[in-house]
Length: 275
Image (tube, rainbow, N blue to C red; front, side):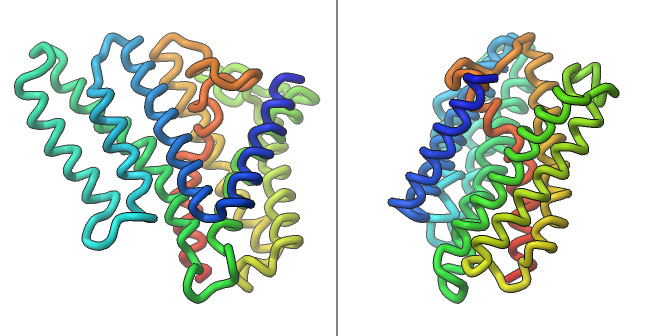
């Protein structure tokens, strides 16, 4: 627990320091680094399953997908890069890999692109919100709100589960998760969301009041839990406890970013409606 706490403090220091000095550009590249490391760990788990994804090409296209909302002019977009990836992998699969696992290689490599960088690029899209007609750094603060609410659910669920967790939530997927922890995580996220909206409300849309922020945090936190369970399903299939050992007390980068994967597109939709 001590290692996890220290790692959490250091990671938040890194995040706030990066965006504090480099603003949106720092946030974009931070998300990109997290995305490519998460995708790499995902492909490593696929290898433990006996699969052979197109690792290098997949990671390269993943970087382009993540950066697309910030740096690619129309008509180029993350969706276009994803489409080109399908073309590239379909061509490669005709002459590579064994006939009995070509379909699995194509499917899992593309799923890695779709599930990790394509989903996380919505965080980059959030950072672009309000750049021309909103408060300064509106999109950046909204992205921080989303990360804080998603990761806050992890922390709240962990503490509540340790204190009073009794009823298993998904024993066949993640034995340590409890319904008490789930409720505690949701409440903690709602509190974190309301506090950020209260203290940094001047950099957020006027309609994003503390009450609205608390209510909005509930579905975001719930999706964060689902994201975590999905990663647990993948790890069980790969017969591994953690996706890696990069972060002391937490595990791999995938263990850190998992809760953001489903929350990011939901947050982008929510914030877009508030503009």
